Image (cartoon, one colour):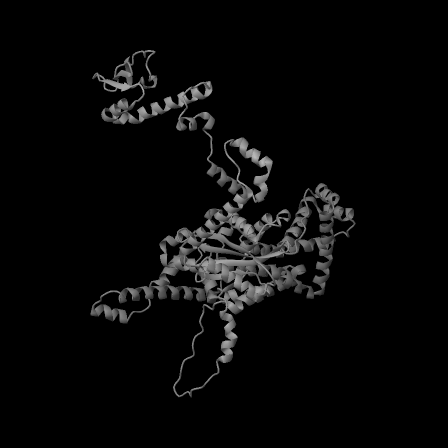
Length: 634
């Protein structure tokens, strides 16, 4: 290619000098020589008002250079538009494209984008709808985007309602793709209003990870009787079309929820019918009374019930632990110690000067127990023990003297250490079951291993004399309130099918056998059903008919389970090799052991339903909450 010649001042397109050499202008016709055709001399002509002839030549003769030609033309238009804006004296009106691509408008955001970002700011930031009416907020938006407007409060309400409807639709569509769904529910009261919250949980069939969504936070009016709760639950389940998919609903141990499920829950396990024998005389039974008693149970339809394990542990740590005070020595020691501790906690929480003294003497803040959270007592005692460990007993004694509280005796300080040592496994189990460590992976398979290992850990604490009555009371409470899980073959099977536990969490061979027998029976049943269906839909020979007639249980299910239990990986990815076990894992581990998800829903609800927003309507409140919690479904 020959080198480019100096460009004449009359060249109208200097940006194309690397591709075309200017020759002359005759009227409105420009003549050029194509440098891309070198060494062949090819003259091209084009109109002063259009480059179409040059573009057609490049497209026809040099198609690989067409993108470069277009890029040079685009850059020339941008430079020309910038010059027109900077000079401000252009007589020709710029094109829309040129105006939008100039530096002054390069960061312009569309009105639709502004509206979407504003709704996201209000819902994710838990801001009042009246934010859009604040002059300072309007100035902020105008300052960033002068040509854009801020929607009014009524429009914000409408847009959030539309987004909440979209969220509900997306959640419904997601649950329509799965076969099993679990729910949790609880009641909440704030600003003289009562609500029932419902969350849904299922397992992604591809990744086996837990997926959760908030379904509702509906207003409850009147008394919270069992039938009122049942009616609201069925209404929400029906709205999302999951009535037949719910495997279990987890609630706390409140008497109204317990009665609602005891009356209206569908019994998934049908009782066996008695065998008929010959020679029995026919008997008549008046079923009118039975039908009358059972009529109420058909009024609503609720899924099987699962009591919240975290709430049950809370009851064991409070109600059952009080039974240890039947021992007079323990009663005298625990009441005297905690009376002094409570005095310290009250002083430090009610007085700013007392709090400053604690900070100066101990370099820590004393934690005050919360009446509704037992583990807060454990954490408060742990903080005192940490102060003793790092600052010495004199630090506690100085606080007692400063606050005019009786000093903790050496035996009482030792009791606090022993108490924390016993209660630490309880707090750990509570955090695991309520998903504090990793609530996205809370499976039903965690329940049995957690309780079994908790019992083992507590039994090892029996040698601590000062807290032996407490250990006994806790173990009795666990046996009383959690005994059912070690008889439930589904819960045991769920633990066996979790790669983290398998059969390593207990030495009870009878319990493990119960779970393995259930798994093998299910595998054999599913395999047999599939084989029989295939046989019924196929045209078989006489020999095939004979094989189908004498079809027996598969011999591979037991070995498949055994191979799974012998595998060394603890990751859920192991199920890539066990498709049959994978489906059973999803079915048995879909229920959640605790209703902590509802507690988290109410925590977020409390941030929205603040005192200065107490006039918010129930619909706006629920819409804001659902959009906030279901960001993955927007």
